[in-house]
Length: 64
Image 1 (cartoon, one colour):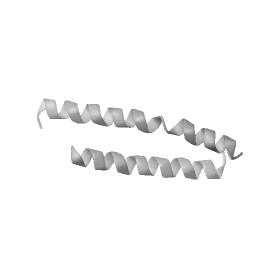
Image 2 (cartoon, helix red, strand yellow; image 1 turned 30 degrees about the vertical axis):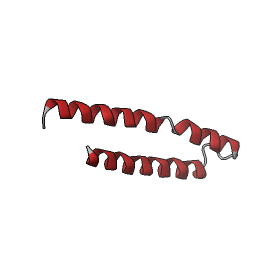
Image 3 (cartoon, helix red, strand yellow; image 1 turned 120 degrees about the vertical axis):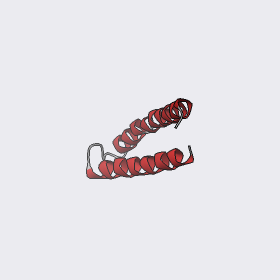
Image 4 (cartoon, helix red, strand yellow; image 1 turned 180 degrees about the vertical axis):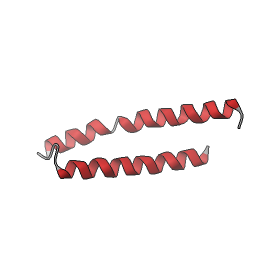
């Protein structure tokens, strides 16, 4: 793989990771609003969010 292609892939995935992390505070705020902060419900939401984020990242990487 050329260095140019690798740079494009690395930059794209890095930006994806930054954007994905921006969604986590919204989950915490949602849990606080529901009175479930730090509980099992929040843990499940975080796990589902991370799972979907990982799947989307893999799809993005496959398209590069």
